[in-house]
Image (cartoon, rainbow, N blue to C red; front, side, top):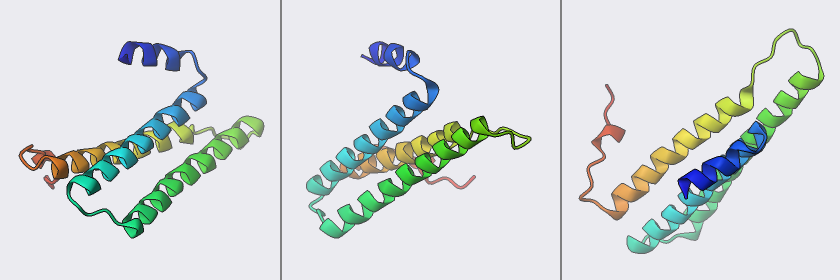
Length: 119
């Protein structure tokens, strides 16, 4: 399945692939967060609302970076920095840490100490 998905993503333009990857990680985080809340009996509409607003912030950041990349391609500012890939990587890393936290809370026996080390 991973091979099929990666082959399909390779055929897409980079921007489209980044958007799809970010949306997949956001959906996974929402799904895992919902499952965790059900398992730990902490379902709360307020927490869900805040989570959705947080995810909307990520989508807005992606939109802003997309427009920045479009502007850089349309006009010569004297420099060109591909900000969308950097934003996508930051969001995916945040979502991976969030997914790890959900997994840890669903399965307390799993050791994820690397998430809390400050070294």
